[in-house]
Image (cartoon, rainbow, N blue to C red; front, side):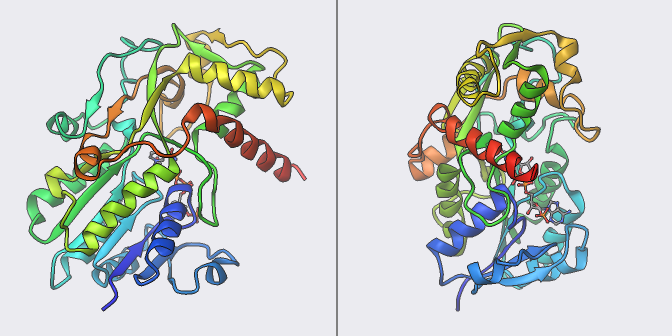
Amino acid sequence: MAPKIFITGGTGYVGGSVLDAIVEAHPEYEVTALLRKIPDDFSSRYPGVKIVQGDYDSADILSQAASEAEVVVHNGDSDHEPAINALICGLLERPTPGFLIHLSGTGIVSDYHSKTYLGKQNPKIWSDIDDYASISSLPDNAPHRNTEKILNAAIAEHGDKINIAIMCPPDIYGRGRGLGKSVSAYVPIFLKEVKELGRVFYYGEGTNTRSYVHIDDLLELYLKVVEAAVAGGEGAEWGSNGYYFASTQEHNQICVSTIVGRILRKYGVVGNEEPVEVTLQQLDAMFQIPKYPGLSRYLFGANSRTRADRAKKLFGYQAKAPGLMETLGSDIKDVLCMEEMRSF
Ligand SMILES: NC(=O)c1ccc[n+]([C@@H]2O[C@H](COP(=O)([O-])OP(=O)(O)OC[C@H]3O[C@@H](n4cnc5c(N)ncnc54)[C@H](OP(=O)(O)O)[C@@H]3O)[C@@H](O)[C@H]2O)c1
């Protein structure tokens, strides 16, 4: 019988890319996608994918679909608690243990809540193996901690019935492969702030450092974990060993700003390509979303340094796709084209 996969977030940057990668690599899998709005071209692009219409608050729909799948790949909103609870409930109804592969993010280990390393490099690099105990007991205000706590509780209580993997990518770059959103989050947000300020920028010393991964490298990792799940879990690790960072490189803010400045000057977006230092007040006034207080410190002033030790140990994971610095030009062009199309 064909392995049954249930995937969410299939119109998003990560989820759409993961859906595309799974369907392309494994046309033999029976894939069901949860979609809240069905894109016109979805069925022509993915004729073999069954659609379930609903959103993350459709608990019954999520539970039912999860109970019918061997493998649930949950993307889209890493913080949505009802969706995780519904998927766990559904998987618990299965007669045999199922698999839940959940998308989280390395915001969870960012140091943006403290001023100690704001604008400076924090020497701490988190390992998904050596630091797992600390990661699984981070304070409640760490991003994505709310859903990871639910998953940790499910691992403790139902580890024999559900095999859980938490995929924890850093900032992702590169063009997405799905038919929904094809640009990642960081570049559009950074460009918006640069346009408002008229210059690329940094805070403090600008040596605050973050990890990055190309979407294509991340997809290779996803495929390995999904394939292991389909094989009954063999070859990957699950539960309290199933935590996967995915970073392949890191860069500090001043280096990113320097490259972005050069590219934006070439495109005529800024007149002066040199990065300029912003004050804390200016930084805090940027990109405010009530749900995520301090987001601009997290994005532009803080550190989030991670090492994909587990993926390296299990799969020999390493960067194959082009690095961030080589990809920024095309990512920026994609965002500028998208903005231009929107203005028509
Ligand atoms: N992009 C990154 O660099 C990155 C890195 C690490 C972690 N993450 C985390 O990964 C998650 C996804 O990121 P992304 O960049 O892929 O986001 P995205 O492109 O905005 O995609 C979000 C997806 O989730 C769906 N969705 C959102 N809320 C939903 C709801 N209530 N019900 C049903 N579907 C819903 C969207 O559907 P519609 O098309 O219908 O809106 C879309 O398919 C986020 O939580 C983010 O924090 C992202």
